[in-house]
Length: 484
Image (tube, rainbow, N blue to C red; front, side, top):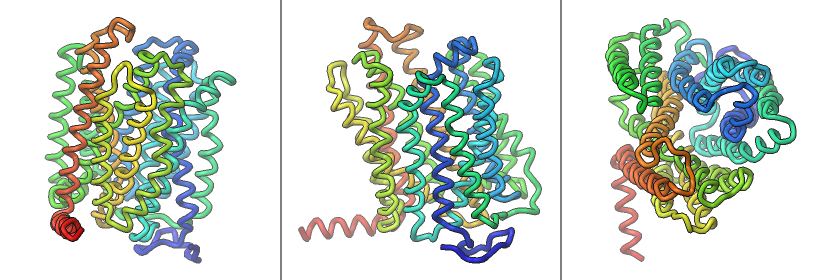
């Protein structure tokens, strides 16, 4: 796996780096992000007490993080093409580590929110460049396996986050959740810096598209803020509408820019890329609600403690740890688009099963629903990402990586909006209690049904990108069926 190349710019072929070391570095970096995100939830009450924050201010902690991700994923793809993906990855990782070390010492909630926004900026840089680096290092026939292996870090972080954060918060204080990722981040930074001796620059001499970046930032900011506060009045609706107008202006300007951050014409021409990205958006707009609803369901309906809830909710990411590498290997063998189609179908079935959960449903059934959904996510996520990155050339690698992260973030944001609207319709401003459990269950059923149907519709996105390959697979399946 090692050769002697020491050039500052990686060759167009597979670069002279250790693929194993790159996988470890990226997996370690990707472990920290979901670990902190899933672990911060149970600690919000303690953070609020120490920083004297209101419930509204606490709700902005994840909102600020999500907004920053939505803004910087796409922009980071273009910046990585210009200054080098390794350099931007290391910059983002260092930014994340520094903010993690500073957050425990901030004196008030507003500075905390600012640090979270900057921390998410580093996250976006890391996520975007990590994907591009993996695709550049891995042989095409091993891409699915490599993405499956690195995703173990993501799902391990999701699994351990709630439980470990509870233990750290109880024994040492909420600050130690942030301290705990600092040494991991430093190790990941050193691995990438010391072993990858070259960098990838696809457009080092191109000017940066400032107009496009600013219009995109304004569009995403207005749409996100308007969507989050959509129920607060007409001003929020006006912000959301203004965001849509800015988005249309951004797309119009990008069509005419010689060096766009988003090549709209390429998106229109590349059906496989466009449909795969749409499938990713659909899937992420559906799966966010699972943890949200089941967390409230287990504590509010079944009366489980926070620790018991965290342990039961870990069933979904735990199965993803084991199934994801299998999904990657299957994608390399049978085609990423085929396995991703199976995965999104399994997700849809699991979500529809979740729509049948009632107050008296056994906890074993709840765990089974999570296992089905988790297996579907594991079979979909890495193969779909592999299909996206395999459908683009080197010149569009940064944009593709940025759009993958953008689709995930906007999907999550869309899910937040849908859930907020549904909860407002069925429960209003009332907290969950014994008197409104039936209304809560009805809201959960409506959203799980909607999300399940969306995932099943996402099957058509996967089939559409396969084109003639789908017809060939259909004929082969029918032949085998008739022969049997």
